[in-house]
Amino acid sequence: MVLEMEEKMSKFLELIGLNKNEIRIYLDLLKYRPSSALEVSRRTGIHRSNTYDALRKLMNIGFVSEVIKQKKRLFSAMPPENIKDYLTQQEGELETMLPYLTNLCKTEKEEEDEFSIAKGVFAVRESLNDLLKLNQPIYCYGVSTEAINAFGIGFLNEFHKTRIKKGILMRHIYDETAKDRAKKLNKMKLTEARCLPKKYETVASTNICDNTVLITVFSNPVSSIKIKNKELANAYTRYFEILWKQAKCV
Image (cartoon, rainbow, N blue to C red; front, top):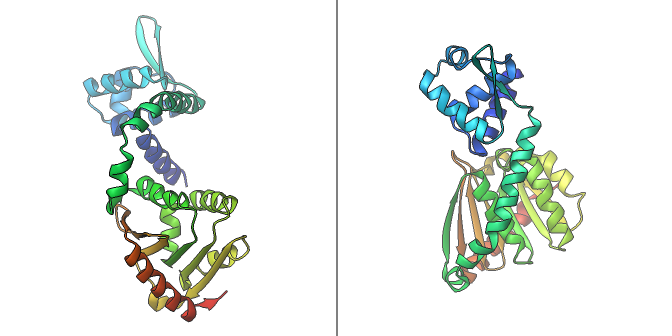
């Protein structure tokens, strides 16, 4: 359990911008008392010069502090709450940049785009969230337990909360492996879910909304293909209706 939590923490710290050396050193200092760079280097196996580089970065972002004791430089990990402060600061900086970034976007160019690829769970999540901007019913099939785990229950719950608030109907066809999830969805407003036998299980799921088809492949990394084409979307919708009739209520 401890190793699993450390692995999750390492992945989280990597997502917010820390490299592998910085992560190892920060987690090491959380476990031990104030330490010299040499002590940290020995415990982590990171070269001393690289240890100093990482410590400087960690001090700059407020994750590590330095004290001089008996003419010796010692480093300590700051409280984990500082991570939240750091993210709040980054969020504030992003807010100031958003207007500029928005101005860089060319609306006409976006409308011309008919095909796009997203890689990585965060990019794929954003592609799914974009469907809500269309304010049209969403039809989804090929959903497995693997898909649920990839997106994360927390994200999916927030997605459905926003969808229902916007009054958007969503119909799902799940693989039999995710029957329990389908049952929970059927208790939500503006939500219908059915299941197909396990033999229909696939590594990809498909969402259709208005003129958009979003196909997500749950490989490593997770990736999605978004196609904007009315005729194609209509064809996929007709196929969804065929599967819907074959799927079982749960």
